Length: 407
Image (cartoon, rainbow, N blue to C red; front, side, top):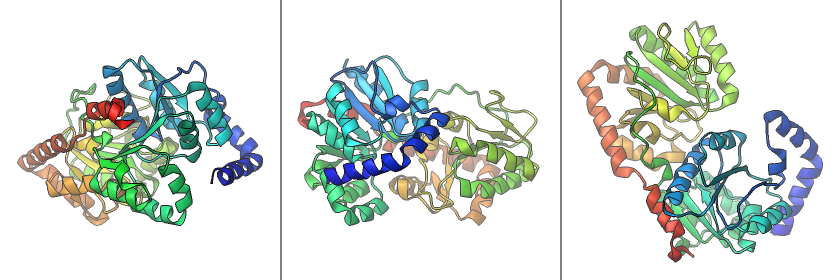
């Protein structure tokens, strides 16, 4: 398996290497880091690997909890450039931030031979064969934390079972988010004795104080993690809400930075007045929409919301994390596509803190929630209480990772 995987990477490098380097330079990538050249890297550190912005938030939470109870240095790597930039913005003492190298086994072997990490902690499911092989080769323990595996990945794993068997045989512990995820890991080929349910690091209690002062507008509706195929639906919804509530503040947060300018053009074409976060850090006073065209700030804006509409759920993207809103006592409206966080949406729905609606029901539901202050306050209380019950503890994760029992 390793030989085949290495050969595939050789072909990728020969065919696409130069174009990928050019694209990487244009995007601001650290090409040396992508080639496994990490400078000032500590030896014998814990290495936490995350994919993108959502996972890097979990990585930072876990890393800080580890640093609170141990002086061990912690390396955090990210697959994406947006995740890497988010890490750099939020790093602290004892944390070392890098971009993940391309998963070419010789590059990973060189890097791991240099840094010799004690443990590799993979957030959720961003498993790379080269990384897993190389870290295990130098004697590191490999742990998946806040493990998440979709049914789609299970189907993929059954088709490519040798690939997944190679990785699962080298992973020591899988700490899954939920019972559903535990079953999915086992169905994908992970040995049952390696898999246990610990909880979701995305649900780590957030700081309840906010750097933002709640605007004197009502209602404050956040459309969070908006995906491309949902943009038109949400812009139409915002326009209808604005007609009913002229003093509304709609905070519109596209999921990906490359969509910021496109959404701004769509808002302008629809005739909706808006301000951009990148141009003004103050809430707009004379326009109804605030376009959140920055990275890593969405949770902060959920803290001042009255209602949250969760993106990635009205088209088949799998659904983004609703807990970022409910932890602040903000009730949630979402669509039917929730496979990435199904257990969480189901828990919130059953508690009356979240509501699944069709695209046609989206605006009526938001207006219903906003029209009755007592009803909205009850929803907020349910959201807050439910969030407190299901929050995972990063301290628990940190102690389990550091404990001798996991070796």
